Length: 325
Image (cartoon, rainbow, N blue to C red; front, side):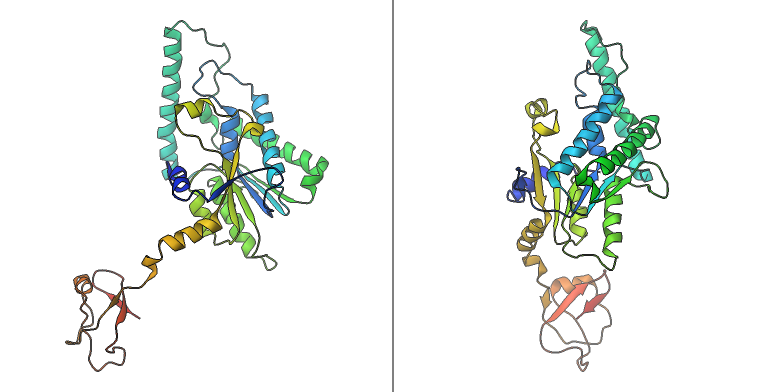
C-alpha cells in the first residue's frame, strides 16, 4: 500500500538519498528481495490508456521472468534471493482494493465506449482485466505454476543462481506461503533471519518495490545496511507517455536508508532534547494535570529525596499523570 507522492516529496527534500544504478558501480548486496506485484502489473498491462492494446498471456509470463532476471543481474545477491507475491490481504485493504477495482473497471468500459463512438474498431481479443491479479484467481494459479518452473530451471542451469538461497512465496495459503502483502512477508523473513545464531549484523539488504511505505518498513527493520531499488519516477502526463517498455531501457535508482536515517537525525535534533522545567515546591500532590506542565509548575513533597532544587525532566503520559526521571 503506497503513500501518494511521498517518494517524490522525500526525493526533492533530500536529493542525495538516491543514486542512479550504473553498470560496474553497484554496491555489493547479500540479500535481494522482490515485491513481485509491481513487476506483475507492469508486465501484464503496461498501457491501460490504449484501448487497442492486447497482449497474450504467454508474452506476459515471459516479460515477468525477463524482468526478474534483469533485476537479479543488476544486484547479484550473494546469499539470499526472496520473491514475494501478495497473499490474501487484511479486510481493510480488501475494502480499499474493491473500491479501486470497481473504479478501474468502470473507467476501462467508458474508454471503450468512447472509442466505439468515434468509429474506432477494437480488437476481437478480450481485453486483459488487471483485477485478476488477485490471490485465488485462475490467472494467479497459472502464474504461480510458471514461476515455480522458472525458478527450478534457473537454479538448475544458471550458475549465478546456484550459490544463492532462493525463496518463492506465492499467493496461496500454504506451509510455504502465507497471507498478507508481499512487503510484509519480506519483513517477516528478515526478522526471522535476525533470530538465527549465525546471523551477520552487517548483512546488506536490497529491496525492490514501488510502494513508498517500503521506506518506513526498511527504517523500522533497524538494519544498518538497507537500500531500496526502484525505477526512475517521472511526473506529468508527458512523462507517462514516455515510459520505457523494457527493463533494459529503464533507469533504476538505489535509495539508501542509512543515509535517510542520518538526514532525519540531523533535521530533528532539536526535538530530541528533553523538556526541562524548574521545580516549584508548594504542597503535597501525587498527580497534576497537563495544564501544570504547560505552565511549568510542578508541586511535590519538599522533603522527598526525589526532588531537588535543580530542574527536572518531565514527560507527560496522559492528561493526569506525570512521569519524572
